[in-house]
Amino acid sequence: MADVKRVFTVNGKPFFPVGGQSRNSSGYNDAESETAFKAVKLFHGNTLEIPVYWEQIEPEEGRFDFASVDQLLGSARRYGVKLVLLWFGTWKNGDMDYAPAWVKTNPERFKRVISPTGTAIWVLSSHCPATFEADRGAFVALCRHLKANDGVERTVVALQVENEPGILGSDRDYGPEGQAAFDGPVPADLVARLQAAGHGPVYDLWQAVGGPESGTWPQLFGWAAGELMTAWTIATYIDRLAEAGKAAYDLPMYINVWLGEQGWAMPGETYPSGGAVGRVLDIYKAFTPHVDLIAPDIYVADARGYEAMCALYARDDNPLFVPESAPGGSNTWAMFRAVADYNAIGYAFFAVEHLFAEDGSPRAELAPLVDSFRCLAAATPLLLKYQGTGRVHAVVQEEGLSSLRLPLDGWLGLVQFGAGPLGWNHKDWRHLPKQPPAQAEDRRGRGLVIQAGRDEFYLVGADYWLVLRPQLPPQQALDASLVKDFLLPRQAHYVSVDEGHFDADGEFVVDRRRNGDEVDGGVWVEPDCGVVRVLLCD
Ligand code: DGJ
Image (cartoon, rainbow, N blue to C red; front, top):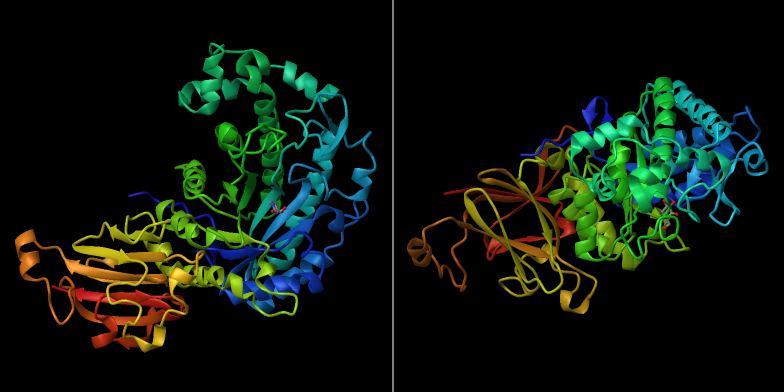
């Protein structure tokens, strides 16, 4: 049984963010952020992730203007959602777009990364103390402001420090400071940690050149030295920001990652070099003690690739938090894997405003995504309780899958997709499928089955049936089959099947009881059902 490390809290209690991330320019003012707040409410989310821009809060060096931050706090309270603020400082997607004009226009003081060809590129160098001092000053000012204006109400539940940090356009900084670091000694504590760990990608790179006990970056890490040195430099840079920020206001802080495993997997070319990709994750985990977690932005559409990324970042020393994911597509069902199989402690998708068309109406094609996030939101009290116990099961209709047997305690459980045991003409008039799945290629059965006790189940999701049977020896199972007027195995005996929701205290509230025809053939689940509770007896 894995212990799930909770990072986010509200009123001293664990909190599961179900959120949307705004588009990049939505944090500038109220008019821009309004749609984002509305979109989060549309799927019953509890959190909006939205940027705070260094260029906006410090338009002149040392002069701070927190009007935009105050607007966000006010709106979030009005809408009743929590905030995760994204610090767009030194880095935004491997470049420097959000640095203030006084930083952008002074490359002599705020050094740029120099590429291998000697070009100064649009990335601030992590080897430049002036840039670090300036970013730290602004970040600490932000933290102080939040403490003074939100320290009691606690609308902000976490800070993302920088955004997808790293260098796009070079594997490292070839300028004089960067070169000196590259030719300098690898920190002894990094070598000591590698020795102690005895495995991992960084360890393997070190061993590949013979595992020398000391030396320069290229002496210890060969061809990968540029990326590894940059990772160490950026990790320690951000950790020092987080340390200073936490000293001002102790909030959870995390770093997000532009994933590096897709495509050519070339540092500086297909992803920002020095970001916390798989190859250097061990460096980040070892050298960011003031950062609560490293969070992957997962836009991977194929099931295997998606799961590989979950597996990479869900570690004993790093709970999985997905701050960005795709606004649609396979994320509509894959998200349940992250939550059930990798114990994700929070989940959000990017470009939340996209839920609305320009005329303000909800986009019909994104209704499945909205449904999935509503289901997730409805299940959070259960997730906080049962993740890590083996009782949370993902229901994901992978391509071509028609049924899925669940490893339940004391019962047999089969999830059926498609027409279900009774065909689409099933008997519960309230929750008729909106459209048969055969007509909707991008629609999949999905959700969660949570076994709270031997005889107590909770179901959320869309487009699936759960059929439960007693666990009987084969000969008794045969005797008990073919009951009623259907060619169906004997189902478990229901004490009750109820549709409902959890109240603010986490108590289940029944909204509708199902019995008789409405449960013949299994328990049908779709988003309008809310949370379905099934109580069984022998
Ligand atoms: C990831 C970044 O973190 C976001 O700010 C945004 O640029 C998205 N990519 C766009 O897909």
